[in-house]
Length: 195
Image 1 (cartoon, one colour):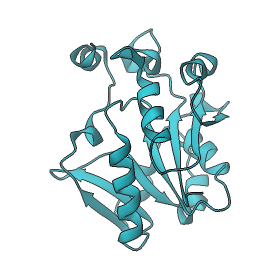
Image 2 (cartoon, rainbow, N blue to C red):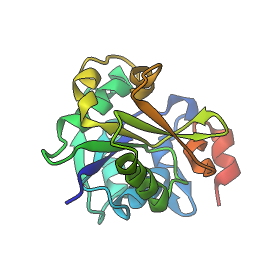
Image 3 (cartoon, rainbow, N blue to C red):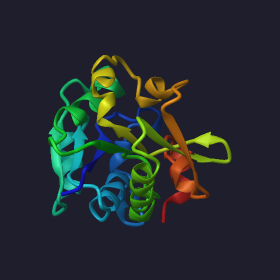
């Protein structure tokens, strides 16, 4: 059993994307959320916790056959913080940290997840480890269980970024992998990658 779990945030409405649910949009024949879930399942992170909300049944249907644990967030409309809290609330006792993945980042590979988790261990298990490309912070991030109480205090559409800003116990992990900054928020971004 791994001491780092994966939390995949797949509850949002993706309002900037338009009417079609963003996480169900297909890239390379698969839903965006399936790409991310498969990367997590094929990584060393265990368990893979998927937080659902908007269109939960349809999202879950896209993830059939994967070794995941689904947690429904009924408060998803209240913002990102509620999904982060929902994921952290079901971490198994042996999990010392979670790598938090976003459902709209289909280019994240298992190798990136594993490298981040290994580096978190190698760097002394900091409060958080954030990947950085050319000075720009990205995702996924590794969040230590020590942050659970702080995350529980979050409200609204705020993710971990607000918690991590300005802390000396948050380390950056330089990478050349552009997947850490490639999320799909709009139809225009989606059109570039659709095949």
